[in-house]
Length: 330
Ligand SMILES: NC(=O)c1ccc[n+]([C@@H]2O[C@H](COP(=O)([O-])OP(=O)(O)OC[C@H]3O[C@@H](n4cnc5c(N)ncnc54)[C@H](OP(=O)(O)O)[C@@H]3O)[C@@H](O)[C@H]2O)c1
Image (cartoon, rainbow, N blue to C red; front, side, top):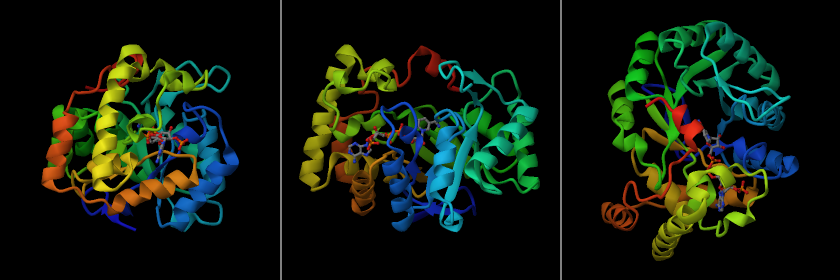
């Protein structure tokens, strides 16, 4: 397995992790049996980085991951997140909390659901605009001191916020959306800040929530409760325009002799040893396909050819609806 170090002198994780969110939430029907088999297959293949969050499900995704790693704790590197507050009785409602007492309670609840003694990487999922990040990270540092957490991360934090957080405690990873159709970390200074501060970038939704794989051809095919039905890039004219970009990805992948998903993942991984990608799938066969990206090397000329047909900012539509965009710490 290809590995990469998180942060300066941090832990070694597989260059491709497994995003577990879609197994329980957002992307249509659940199939827990196949999801469990997929997580265990990932561990069999030497992938150790499993990505979850308390808000996925809500809550049940951590339980699923916990079940999958029973008896195999040492093979797994568990990353989970707190800070997007959901209530199982009304899952549509969202809040954000970075209050120290909330951080401590959320961590205890995640440990219990995961059935583990310590979380390998604990992220603040979204920065709480009402709580100074120093206070939140101070509470997270307390969890490290208490032995409940090993490494700290932030998600969707700006470079300036990251710098303030690093002044309180080392941050191993910043998780942000990064893919062919979401280049924000390159354009908004986030990747540069990560490099200055010795923080790895964990790229989420590296397959553009499935769109970049070429497997999605009609928005009507999504189930009624699929989040993507309300995601601007998957709606109306945006969908049609973005599909034209994906046709280019398909053509480039065919030239390279790989699948579009592999090309999209290889593109992310080509940005440096300090970048890790966490594609999500609930299917073993797709996990195997995605791991094939580790053997796809893109030359400078191939990266330039990709940029020529799929330039930064080419995607039509914002990556989240308005409420989601406002929760991003820009
Ligand atoms: N920090 C944050 O705010 C945040 C936000 C979003 C996601 N995340 C994390 O990042 C992980 C990955 O992101 P994501 O799941 O949103 O998006 P993604 O990895 O870009 O795409 C996942 C989608 O692609 C499909 N897919 C995967 N491999 C495929 C293949 N080879 N061919 C065709 N389709 C394929 C999956 O369907 P199947 O499952 O049916 O294969 C799923 O619908 C999540 O699981 C989550 O852990 C974090």
